[in-house]
Image (cartoon, rainbow, N blue to C red):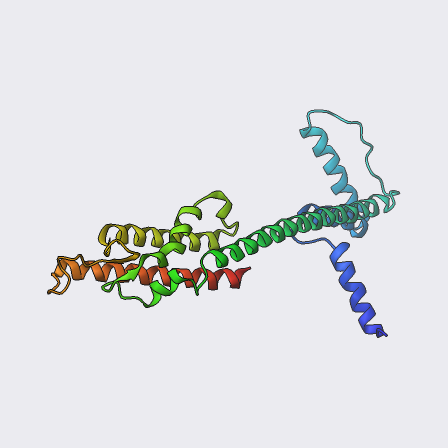
Length: 248
């Protein structure tokens, strides 16, 4: 059972949420302040102020309205009406804001679910234990390698630049684009510097005429560049997975 204190706290929270105006809702505060002023101000000050407002409106509106002057016999009806009107406005304001927040939350939820399904697709196409990622992580490209092990990143390169493969979350999409660009650089480099060995599936950056001898410096530079690009792809691949899982 709830205690009396807990019930009071609950009532206060509900009242604060729905009936008491927000500071951001300035119109509500203006109307409440005016209504309270009508009720609380001494009658002479009240009469002068309200009659001044009526005259000011008639002077500046361009249309003269025959509004009666308030007199000392006026009751508090106007002030109470303004306060009730302000509270009703506040209820409507909060209802609209809550409806907007619910709508935005639903959109955000659907976008997150879409990104989650796309991440699942990514982990199927290019998981950490794929031949391509394992090759990029561990292989020294100064040695021959099985070119079929690059099939996964080649498929990623040809498919994941299309609209169907874009994450709704811009920060995740930036990580994916960074990975894609690194893969593009690696594929371009390895295509221009390696050749098949004996017509088989193995390729090497060292051609037959250079094999078995002392490598020239320019070839050593190419090997280092290819190894660095492979490391960049592996690192950006792992960063994308970690970042996406943390933010979805």
